[in-house]
Length: 256
Image (tube, rainbow, N blue to C red; front, side):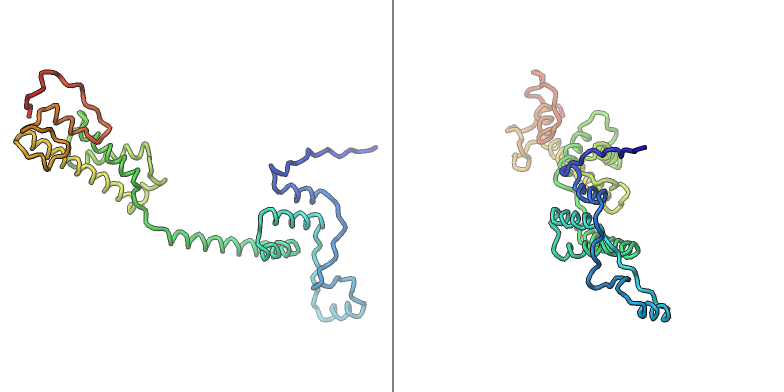
């Protein structure tokens, strides 16, 4: 009774860079000759074998590697453009015992860990990006101009901005809420943006109540006093907020 081996679909080298290695493992190859620095056990004569047994020492049996796997490993290292010393290390790795391979893997993992720690140590402290600061400025104006805000000072407006940032994230790093040192910079940026907006609004309101020389107010109308339409126009200037359409009877009147 004959048995047929299930056919394996061909592998695409572009899809699987290890296809050469897999193919080499599936093929049979004559045993490669032992390395020059190791003597095969068969080369020892009877006298030497007896001496070794009498001394109580054992000679490790040299490992053999499938020639196809060795050739595939060589092609793979060239494809990955490894350095010459790295190629030699890969070739040596093929002939190592299982325990030696595990030891080398552990050592290399520790080397990678040390390199990562150096990179983390050399990284500069986190700072809010310009894009994040711009978004905070826009939301600070929107919060202060909202008709639903209960207070203009204190933690209320700041908390609203922080909740908006947590929801939309913008340029916030993941998990920054759990880093008090970095997250305090975000809170400080929100507080500073609110202070600047409140200061601007306060100056505009003061100049709407009394004459001014227009030197300390940007984009101020050329009039002794600002009416309500001119004042609200300056409030939303430079922000993404919109004012309502003006009513004709507001022109020329001071409402503050």
